[in-house]
Figure (tube, rainbow, N blue to C red):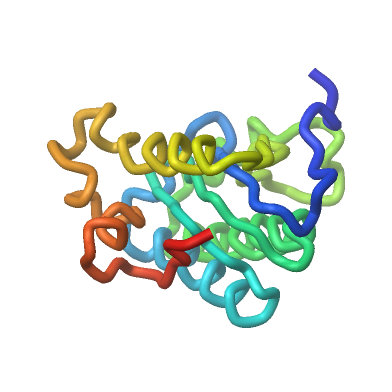
Length: 177
């Protein structure tokens, strides 16, 4: 598969994204690594007009629905910043095995970096209808349930499911589109 399989042509429109850690390595098993994701999303909300409609953070990937003034640029900033911060955290915690795997599985064309944290791309899917939006929100929220982590979506701490149930989640979201 070529590097350009998924492209964002409608840069101001809402998209569904999947961001996966290289080789599905379990990075988001500790609060500190999840906080990097949440901090980055909050920054993008305040600085790049990111509107976040739904999200879930699992141990090795995240799903989100979002738009911004230039969502392709926002997602590049998100992945770049979080990769650097995740590597800093892993180095600080002396997580040698994960760091070695990020170096081992790094794509050959990534010659300027010692490590690769994220798989290439975000698999953007343009949200074209209300039905598609609802379907993707439900998919995101049911992900931890399908994996058997929780019985109800609202019980997964790292998800916007709580927001849609009337409780406050960990990060502000837009519930109306």
